Amino acid sequence: MKEYRKRIADDILREKLEGKGAVLIEGPKWCGKTTTAEQTAASVLYMDDPSNIGQNISLAQISPGKLLAGKTPRLIDEWQIAPKLWDAIRFETDHRGEQGQFILTGSAVPPDTDEIKHSGTGRFSFMLMRTMTLYESGESSGEVSLADLFTSPESINGSSDCDIDRLAFLVCRGGWPQAVGMRDKIALQQAVDYCDGVIRSDINRADNVNKNPERVKRLMRSFARAQGSQTPISVIADDISANEGSSLSDDSVARYIEALKKIFVIEDMPAWNVNLRSKTAIRTSDTRYYTDPSIAAAMLGLGPKDLIADLSTFGFLFETLAVRDLRVYADSLGGGVYHYRDKDGLECDAVIHLRNGAYGLIEIKLGGDKLIEEGVESLKTLAAKIDTSKSPAPSFLAVLTGTGNYAYRRKDGVYIIPVSTLKN
Image (cartoon, rainbow, N blue to C red):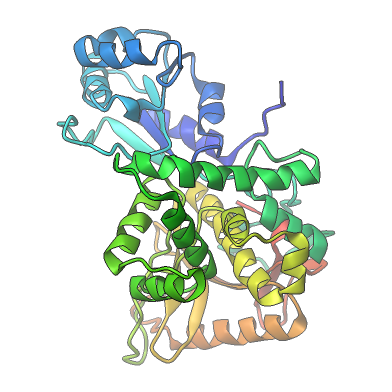
């Protein structure tokens, strides 16, 4: 049996179980939800077990309590197969009057929520799990802590031996737990297999509507070209027409994207709003991202050597990797990740915003002195525009790089951090 690699979600799950009767873990297929939940669960019900799925669905309809009996916390895996379980679990937690009773996992939002009568407020806690960060897969040293940056340390220390070839491989392999530790050629195939599954069947689970696999493939390729941008639906539709030799209506593109969000293939990034000294208009469109960079690489048919030959595309896909890691790290700190862009074209790739109001500004650059300097100047310009009489000043400014040997703080206070030195 493959050794379990500790996940950042482990501690989050345990804390949530202390405060609520049930915890729902959502996220893309193959990201490790069930395996992580099994580390804490005292008993397990696999709803999609082929030998019992029919019986499980029937019991969920007529006698759900039988499915919920077992040592606690009891894991109900792929609960959304029988949405009626939601209200049964809510009822059971109410009557038991104890915390930490159930863990639910799901790789899709239920297509039909009519059978769910109660929101679960006060009984359920929710957590989103993503693919492995570099720190979780053992490919980041973790010498630089995102949490520590909020205290503005005078110096940071970290060294990276991740060269551009290795980084290209990590982008294309992605953070799929199953792929970590595999022989390179086999590891790279895992994202391709994942995308095939999404195209052939998984996307249909989002709304129980069968979709043309070729159209899904074209949409996913176009979305891969939009990584890190605020590309509108209409432009994606135009891109499909120009690059794929066919067309999809704006409405069809929107429906497909929504379906991919429901199965956690896409996770766009919301815009960040802040008080500025001037009346600069802030753009509020979401930034387009897959949940893992390997999805974009697989849909574009790119391998590590292709990325090295096309550094522009490499940069966009590296940004997707960096955003994935930052989201996981920020979650563990009780924060979120946003982007900033105004009408003058000033951007910030990632704003880490904590619940206490503290925030840090991060530019993501593949590497190279010129790009890093551009990132530093952009961060300084944005920081100078923030009205600190109405909003706190940023806790830190940082350039997160793909390549580079060392993590350090510059004389001007900006941190330079290779992604392979970062942790939560």
